[in-house]
Image (cartoon, rainbow, N blue to C red; front, side, top):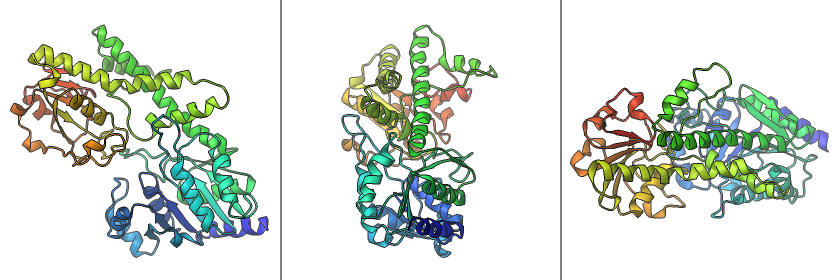
Length: 445
């Protein structure tokens, strides 16, 4: 039966007749669904959020990497459909899981979305189906969590159904790379699953990189994010040290980056944001404890990066005291940028929100301007900020504020106008100096 299931599914993939279900239509799932449909596959995108499905059917994208025109064209061509009804996914040939993997309040892995999605798949899966997980997780998740759940279907993994892992590598706001052009790591649970994973993803992306097993693929993604987290923590720590020595850390890094070998520049900031770097390394920290091993570098990096918003607030407090003669309790602060990263609306784990919350907690009056975030969406850790609206740039009156804090350096901000407001500016991104603007009222943090 294995040979029949494998050969039939492989043929469907190779002839582009396989029916693909993408589960979770966020920053990973929606671009993947559109890219797969563009390749000639028939795709159904699923999300529990019916509002997203309504937007997609209306041809409105909520992800910068996908245009409205693509949605309309693919829908008209009959290559893509959307649903929030799982029963509509019965009979699919390939399921790709792209759901969130956050941390619990105790900083432990929360696989509830992966588990519930896999349980739904197990209720609808048929013989000769491939299930691929893309959600970032700890090594061992595919064979320790997915495989036992899918086995409850009565179909034998590796014999009747096939399971694999391929880590997402999306980088929101990066115009140089997209889903199709980012090399794709793939692995399957067994030889036939590996061949199916490679065959499927070769239809979707330009470069596929097979590895020996799913644990290795899971470890690759974790390693990529730990590498960034540790190096960002290093420069954040250097920022604090060099600031005490009256040395500009950005000048130091730019100088070191002129060395053509042995150095890779990372830059400091107000903290870490996004789903990957602040969260994913702790999946390995948690898993390592099972082997009675500690992850000191990872935990120290997490501690340093998590403390950056507090450091920024302390620099703002010092500047207010020295330049304006007031404390935070009476201060009126304008935050520039509330998204975690420049030029995108992504609010996941944004350190700007932590800074806003800290300032409000200290008694300051705080407003923010972000051209990409009209208002703060629902956030698990900051429910009280739901609906907090961005101030229009044209409505910013310097007389209403005591200081400006640049937390996210979006390109479409008029930084020269900020400089002309003649207010103290706390710049966490070196945005002013990079644009050769006057620095007499700017302090870096």
